[in-house]
Figure 1 (tube, rainbow, N blue to C red):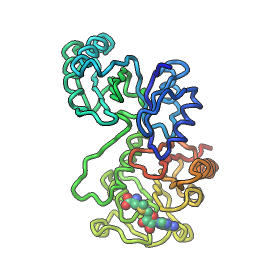
Figure 2 (figure 1 turned 90 degrees about the vertical axis):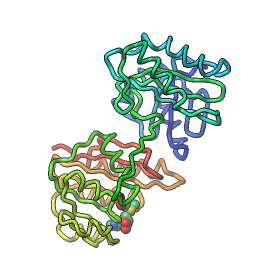
Figure 3 (figure 1 turned 180 degrees about the horizontal axis):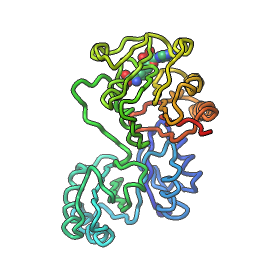
Length: 338
Ligand SMILES: C[S@@+](CC[C@H](N)C(=O)[O-])C[C@H]1O[C@@H](n2cnc3c(N)ncnc32)[C@H](O)[C@@H]1O
């Protein structure tokens, strides 16, 4: 079987990702590395990509097409040269492009050793501008075993603009927790714009990474957590810290909010139920983000159950297992209309 795409997921959630691929009529050709599969799609890559662009899977984080497979036995220079010849006429010369290389297993080279000569060769031959941060079109290269799998697609086809869905953010001075990346990634992937000077409720806020991100985006934040917030937030007049549990705040006549975020360390179903209770304190045009913490065993049913509870009160606008998620899935919610 010849693969038409490569799919990537967190290896901890491999079984759920494989189930998503099979549901979309994809057949696994080979597991190239933990959580990375070569797959034959029932139509072509672009049919699956369009299906998933409209209705993305939760666990498969990234897909990229395989249009040619080169043997590495011919040497890297040959692979680069043939790839330039093969893909130059397929690139749209007006649109920014990038080359994204992943190397699976042990090879004595780094992605840069391919990205640089290949992108320079393609830019010179096609005239397309190179833009690694905001490419419209991406040439994906995956080296595994003695093969180079290569394919060209639009960034919107790939589920993530980043190679393998690996979205890294620069560490910032003043950063409070790594959890900040989780919220930044969610805002980016779900394309959420926060209202100017909105009112935000952060459930399970301590030590305050998400609150810091919300403050950077000019939100007035009510942070609910029995644990203390980082000292920099305690001094911030636009942060109100209520040292309560989310259950206690519910009994305390909560305000109404533009955005509610919930990163509470709680069982997915309990957290979803509490979130449901908070639904009535969200403005009709508001939005919510929740991380559903999943158990190691039986995570599929815990997630299904959590999502079903949320569905009773909200529209699920998105649900993804993000690069910065650990054993959890991030869900984007909007109020049910009408
Ligand atoms: C993963 S941490 C949140 C990290 C935070 N998002 C950040 O960026 O710093 C989980 C927090 O949930 C809080 N928590 C757990 N159960 C809670 C509850 N019932 N009500 C409020 N907070 C709760 C814990 O005290 C803990 O601080």
